[in-house]
Length: 505
Image (cartoon, rainbow, N blue to C red; front, side):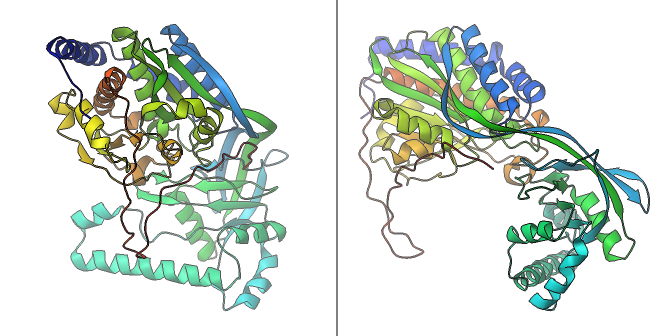
C-alpha cells in the first residue's frame, strides 16, 4: 500500500521535508522546553502539584503556538507533595548523607526523628527472626542488601585482573543468594517485612536500590503507613551498614517533610491541529507526561514529551492545514499502569477506531534506532513508504521489523495496539538508560542529548506529515502471531485493560 507520488506531490513533499529539517535545526525550542519542564517545574509524580503545573504549562505553551489544547480529566489519585529531606549522621561522627524520602511516604513529626540505625542480621530460622523483631523498636532499620562494590562492571572489566573480577562477581552472587535465603526464613518478602518492622515499632526505614551506575539509585514508592521511608545513596548506605555491622551504633537525625493532599484530579493534556480533508482520521503524537520524582524525569519521559511538543510546533509552522487531524497526547499516570492512555482509549473509541497512526517515544534521550510493525500485517507498506521521505542521515540508524509482534506493555502505545489501532514505538538508543537514568535520582536535564532528540523530532514530524498526506487509510489487518518458543503455545494479541481511575499509592 505504498504512496502513489506524482511529480508535483513529490516536489511538495521534498519542500515540506526541507522546511521541517530547517525549522528543527535553526529554530529549535527543545532546550527551552526542557529547561521549563525539568528545571523549573521538576518531577511530575502523579497526584502532585508539580504534575498539575506541568499540565497547565503544556496547555499554555501549545496555545502560544496557536494550537488548541486542554487538560482532560480521566480520574483521581491520592495527592501528595514532597518537602525537605535531611539525613544527618550524628554518631560516631557528624556528616550529612545523601538521601531522599520515597514517593507518598509519611513525614516525620515534631521536627524529625533521632535514632540508632540497625541492619537486618542473618537468622537461623523464623523463630530467630521473631526473637530479633522486638529489638527494632525505636530504631531506624536498613532493609536493602548491601553491595559488594560501588563500581559498575565496566570499571572492573577495564581495570581489574580477570581473577579479581570473577571473584567479585561470585561474591556478589553468593551474597544475593544468602540474602534471599535469609529473607525466606522470616516467612515474609521484601515488601511485607517492612510492614512487620513498622508494627514492631521501627521509627524509620532506609533502603538503597543501586542501579549499578555511579551515583544512580532507583527511586520507587513507599510501603509504610505512619513512618518515613528513605532511599539512601549506595555510598552512604554502605557506610551506615558497616557502622551497624561492626557495632559502632550509628545514630542519625532524619527530617522528612511531606503533605498528604487527599484525592486530586488526574489529567491528560490533549492538543489538536484539525484536519482539513479527513478531519475524522487521526495521527497521534504520544508520550507520557508523568514521572517518578527521584530526579526530574528528563529521559523518562521528558525527552518523549518535548519531542512530541516540538514536533507539533514545527508542523503548525510549516504544515498548518494537515489533511488528517493531528493530536498530541501527553498521558498522565503511565508509571502507575498506563492509566492515562487507557482512559483515553476507553473514553474516545471514535478516535481510536479512526487512528491512521500513532507514534510513541518513551525510552530515553537517544536517537531512534528501532521501529516494529507491532504485528500489523501491512505495516511495512505504509511505514516503509513514509520512511522513504526521511533523510538518510536519520534512517541509516534505524532497524525495522515487519510485521513484528505486539509488545511494549510498559508504554502507552500498548493501550492503542490492544484496541486494534496501528500504534508504533520509536525506540531509542540506550545511552545507559536502564542503569543510569530510568527511575533514578540522576534523571535530570544534563542527561539529555539534544542532537539525538532533534533527530527524533525530524523523524516524527516527517512520519506524521507523510501519514497525514497518505491517500490511503492504513490497514489494521493483524498478522498471525508466531508460536511462543518458551511454552510452545500460540502467541495472542493483547486485550484492552481498564485504567485505574481512582488510584492511590
